[in-house]
Length: 511
Image 1 (cartoon, rainbow, N blue to C red):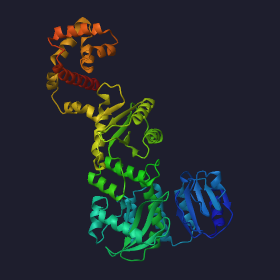
Image 2: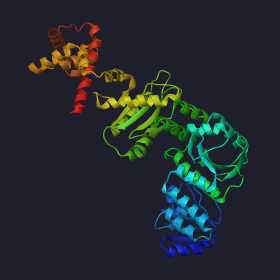
Image 3: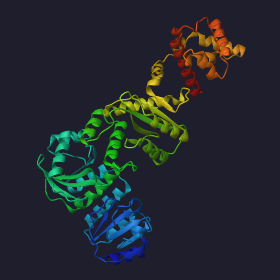
């Protein structure tokens, strides 16, 4: 069928507009493309969502697209039309029915592509393909994570089977894949090519997953026979495109290191084991800071999920360039590099504080660590520290895990009566006295304790004269029968006020 004939059919059906026919040609096939696709056939009509078109996206000779192309891209069109009614999926299905191919194979192909476009589970699609073709399918990223596979999946190669069971590739398997990559004469771009896996005596059809000239992973079709069916050859690049979108789940990052670092840490937060995190980091050849802390950021109030990716993420990326940062469950998770003592640079602290004030942010910060395999543990520390933002009084947007260890111990005490008994009796005496006399002795002792029994600092904090503080301290000593010159009282008082503050904030939350 000629491209011009196809355009007549689509125009009469009300599916297209803005048709351009500069070099009519015979159409033999259809395909989907993304922003990185390069290996075009002159006799294939390609389907594209214009929103995915970037500056470097190449335009094929025959194109049907949804949305609006830039003026620059419009000038490069040879044979093209805009899909003005319906979606890419519906247009693809309609056009496919117009081509003269075997009805059964055509219908299977259209059904699979439609399921891809509709976002159906790729594992289920691959299992359906296994039933139709007998081919095994698997996709991995460059850290060795198995992103999708058909079921059942069996090859006579124990390392492959162990990798499928644990969800990520053994180091020996990735070494073998890398050695084959270096020795094979693979074509450029995302084009299927065939290899023989000597280890398993299986033939492998491979498509490389590439973005911005970075190799991100592979999609494999595996069979004992070297003769792969046309349907698998046609669909494998489309499967690879689907997996690429999974790998590029954070659109803000383009570099190999950023993509892989964020994906590995996202999986760690979601429950991947420390062993998996360590091995995938090693396989992907990634480097993390020598010493670091986990930062978890939330908003004091409600924000739509889009806020974290569209507003907060770019702002944090400016403050923490070259470091992982990703949205997760109404929060933003990032790594902060520190010195060998866990200190964060003053410039970063100042920038984070300004951003926190601008967006009303609360920041949980873990203890510092040096082994990235422990990321999930320190993520939990930062999250735990942040949970105290609604349970204690605070003046800073930063909640360091080590500052709340006492509260974590208190959390484990189930007996409120016991906690009350752990408070110094002076607190209850002063509360009762203030209630009767209208004085402020309880708060004076609280601030005096915070100021480490320093009268001058206490007067400054209370905005009152030092003599007034001295007089109140004398009253407190007489009422409670204690000597506040004795620094042995400092720690019991600090603990008592922490328990009091914690209990009363919890009671308020329950009311």
